[in-house]
Every structure is written in structure tokens, then in C-alpha cells.
Image (cartoon, rainbow over all chains, first blue to last red; front, side):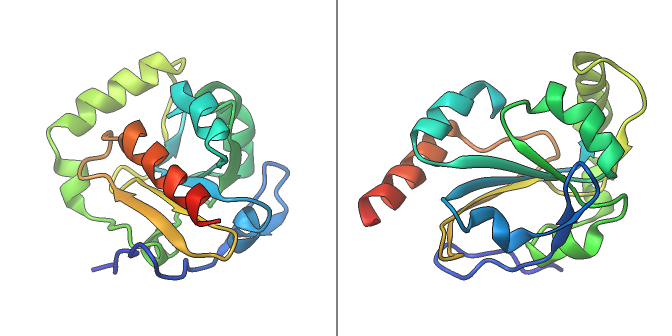
Amino acid sequence: MAKQLIVGAPAPDGIVRDVQGAEVTISSLWKERPVLLTFLRHFG
Amino acid sequence: MEQHHQEIENAGLAIKAIAVGEPKHAARYCPDLIPHAECYPAGLFPGKLYGTFGMQTTLKMLLNPNTAAEGAKASAEYGGGMLVGDPTTQPATFIIDPAGIVRYAYYAPTIYEHPSIADILKAAATLKSDS
């Protein structure tokens, strides 16, 4: 079973893509300002 | 969440979404689904990535009696067509500060449950008062 993230703990990192297909490091998403990061299960 | 985007942004948070799918799916659907969020497709099989963030990928999600009904509702709401995604994947929402610390974590018990906007704004206020 996946281990859930805990408030106060460091967030993990990973790689996603942008809409143009370029690789994006997830940790770069919160470098500038706090983020509300939501994980969706689908588009469409 | 989209309907509360202004409150969320006013609270100092940038809204970003990671979703199952390829860039072409994000380009097609994000402007309709979440126009005020930046979208990042994670591929068609992002189980490992989602697992890293603590989300479960189980048949329990798929077998939830609300899944089919809510899926049909969402499909109709957003223009119909085939869903691109993984019905076994658990949605989740986090607030993460610039130091990379998790300040809020919500794991949806079923696929279409969403975090409370009040809880999100409360966490954002705490983050503001800490900085």
C-alpha cells in the first residue's frame, strides 16, 4: 500500500510533462510560490 | 475547486493539476475542466508517480457503486466522449510550500469526493501567517 504524505513532511518529487510534451520536474511547481497541487484521475 | 479558484489564488496559492493522460489530452480538456490551473499530464499509466504521493490504485475505487454514475455525470458535464484515465486511481490534493513541505494533504475516499474549500483556505492562512 502506498504511504500517504504527512503534513510537515517533505513532498516527494517526480517527472510529469507540460501540455507541449516537455518534461517538468514536479518540485519546480512550488519553487516560486505555494501551490495547491491536485491529482486528477482523468481528462475528458 | 475550479469554482473557488479566485479565493484560492487570493489566499496566495497557485493552482496546478497533474492528471492521467498525455499532453494532447491536457491540451484538449484542461481549458474546459480547470481553466485557472496549470495542467501537467502524467502519462496514461502514472501508477508509480501517484503511489509516490501516497495515492492508492486499487479495484476498491473502481468497484465503488458511485463510480459509474459519477463518471457518466462528469462525462456529460464536460462535453461527453471517452474518458481518458484510470478509474482505479485515487484523487488527492496537497498544499506544498516553496521549501517543498507538505502543508495540507487530502486523499479522496472515493473518486469524486473533493476537499473542503474551507479546509484549503484555513491551511493557506496558516501558511501565510508562518511566512
